[in-house]
Length: 310
Picture 1 (cartoon, rainbow, N blue to C red):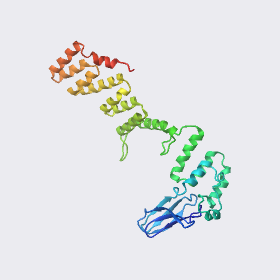
Picture 2: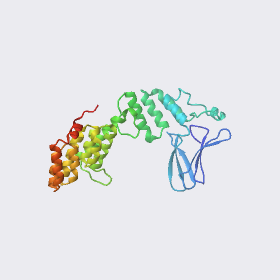
Picture 3: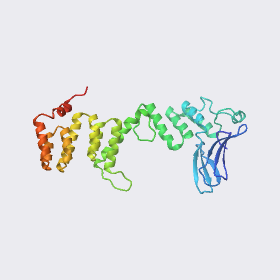
Picture 4: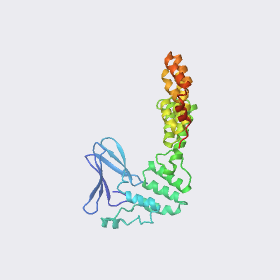
């Protein structure tokens, strides 16, 4: 029997199933869990967190469970009021058993003790932490309490927990990107550790999602992802794109890669494009570029690069 909700019964059976029952009236099966692979031998609830219990089975495993979904309305009302007495959340067990239509209430020793401890708390946050430790799965209770504490203190929560208040998401992700970016001077070793380039790529993706496109492009250039940087650079400015395009083209030119010529022309570096083609032996193409430049045929490119956005 559940130690807080008197009409709730948990049963384990030979088919490996655990069932949660509401025994009032004709009896109703509320939930079925089928994770065990053999007979369920035992069920026991946590002494301080009665909505969490453990099961043992002939399959040689222990499994941990929560009945939060069955008592979600009760938990929500308790956390919202931050007081077990305010909404009459503690009731007499006989009243609950005699009224099949009544909602879940608390009737056990732990909730009664908690109701006596809550008034002694100095702050609403202390009360909330006590309530959360009683009602919420322990792995998430501390994070939930941190969010509430941040709300009461009006201070952004910058720890990178799994649960964040929406008002803190941007600050947390900026801090995470900066942390990853700081790995430039860090040595990397060990199985499973992130490499420096992986950390910088991850930081770059965070910056892109934040709309910090210059930081994204700078980091992508640093890890050698020039094409991706070039695609995003116009979001910073045309001049910034021109600078990156020119640098990338000159890198290619040093390797005698004639494919850099169009990029040099687009960046307004027609003389450099002609020089690269001469170096690679494509004199006809170099002469064409020189003649077009002489006749000011690249004025359209220059005008586009110099144009200011509307």
